[in-house]
Amino acid sequence: MSSPTVNSPNGEFNFAVNSSPDVIGERCNVIERRAKAYFTKAEVSRCAEKQGSGDSKDNMSRAQWCTFIDAVGSNLGLPQSTISTAQLLYNRFFLFQPSKDFTSTKQKTDLCITCLFVSTKIEETYKKLKDILVAAYQVKHPEGPEINAESQTLEEQRRRVIQNERTIVETICFDFQFVLPHKLLVKFVKKLKGDKYLYLKAYNIVNECYKTTACLRFPPAAMAAASIFLATKLLHRENFPSTIHNMPWYKIFLVKIEDIEEISYLILDHFILESSSNPDDPANEEYTQLKLSISQQAKEREAAMDDVTMNNIDTETNGDSLRMVNGASKDHTVRYMFATIPEIHFV
Image 1: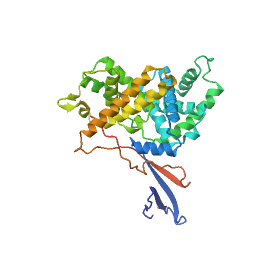
Image 2: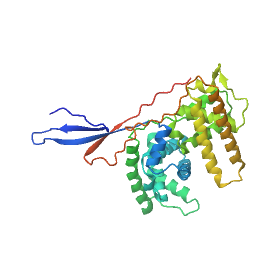
Image 3: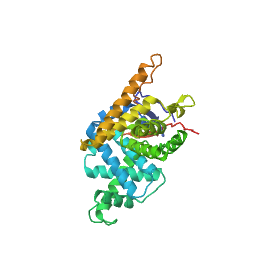
Image 4: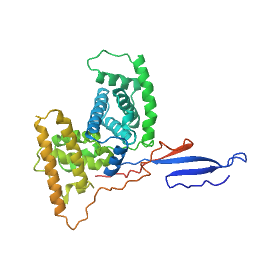
């Protein structure tokens, strides 16, 4: 048998197959899809543009359906880790799948249920699919009649969810290594000697990160630190320590202040968008002023760092990590490569 030959600038590896004298020159394409733990701002924008999404309407839709996942998960008594993982699956799905293919309420509902179903397996908090379907129906129809778990309607929905499941796990390259910020948040608050009110505020904020693209772009330590930072601002904690052991507090957690500020912008924009339905809400002005204040502090810090090279967001995109299988030759197989996530050790 001849040795495999690899020849493709586009990541498609062509292997010559000579399994028998009668089979000569038969070829198959191996398309390699690499999982990636986090994406740059440019990559997220590029994918959103490619999939026909990314405007405020899509951000509102993202928040609405991630809230639906939260409501169904809470109805089932699932832990926050399972709910956040489901929301992360939802966000990752639409990073690569066209939003125009999932426009109806029924399609979005089925997708959310599928994300929650897959998440219960990943987080080992397994629930029967029919239980999730019933809980979702109850959330969608709080005043409606009860539904039989064995009804034809739920059976048809169950079949659609099973079909969606494979699409979701293929989209994430069968890589189930998800690290969440909640455990780090507890350790960070203790290190900063924060109280339970700070923790609860930061906990609610870190959960909101999964209703934005922050969960796609930043590691858990950055989301935990940003949630604490934003919580202190919203709680007006003037005595929050700016340094620990003569070092900026965020450096203790190996987090960049630029990442903290960027996450804060995303969360504040999310809060402003959610409260836009009520223009008279005083929180609107508070969120806007806080965003301007953080922006001003960032400009002042940058002005004081003339001799320091700023770590800007990388605008280069890795084509291999974003390559889609769609449009490839039908005669192919797919190789899924897992992402490498560094371990976080914090004492």
